[in-house]
Length: 74
Image (tube, rainbow, N blue to C red; front, side):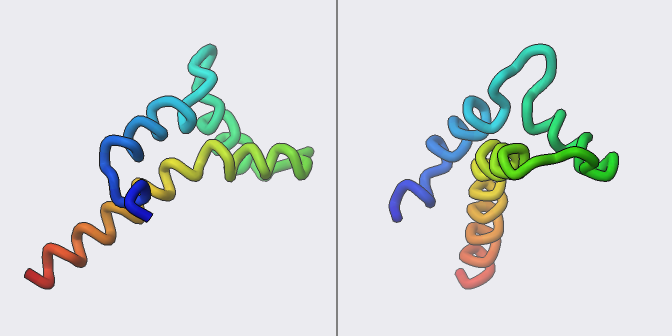
């Protein structure tokens, strides 16, 4: 549980796993554009890929929300 609250690890995951492969564009960016275009032709493996590469950003968003709520309690 300590890993989920570690800023350094979450940022490292976002910059590596979240954006990999980097060329010609980050993989998650291509998938987001595909979904925004209607997700025509997406298979189960493509949706898994979105979750896999998007998870670090979801964890970062979670960490931001938790830290905002914890700062309001103090």
